[in-house]
Image: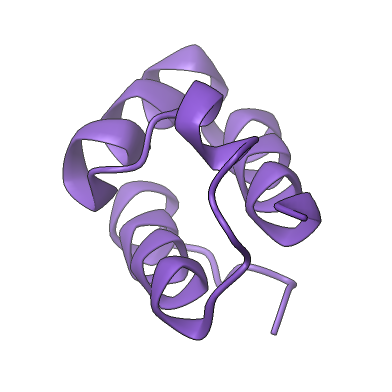
Length: 63
């Protein structure tokens, strides 16, 4: 569980560093710690992907 969410956080950190990771948590409402335990639901994935696009300007590689 939560493998996709964790991978999305890893992508955000690689793309924009710790600042991107922090902004992602604020924008999505899902912290990196919470991402490790939350379900990989379509809603949670969509929240993170949208926030990643806004924060980094890049599309997240996970569908």
